[in-house]
Image 1: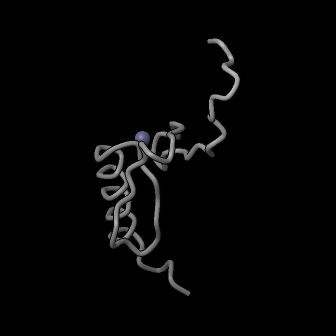
Image 2 (image 1 turned 45 degrees about the vertical axis):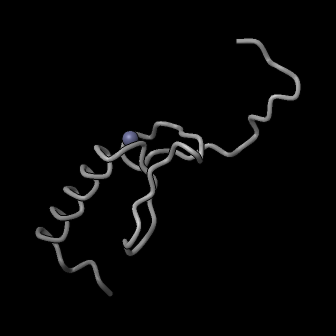
Length: 65
Ligand SMILES: [Zn+2]
C-alpha cells in the first residue's frame, strides 16, 4: 500500500483480548459493566472470553488472596 502523507494513522492499535487481532480504537468492542475492561474485535470474541472466564471460576475459586 502507498504511504500517503498526511494520512493520520498514528492512532494506537488495540489488540483483541481473545484472538490478538489489532483493531483501531473506533472498531474495538468494549463491554461495559465488567470488573476490568478488555477489548474485543466483536461480540463473538467477547462471548468466548466470558465462557473461558466462567470455566475458570467454576474450576478454581482459589485465585483470591
Ligand atoms: Zn477477536
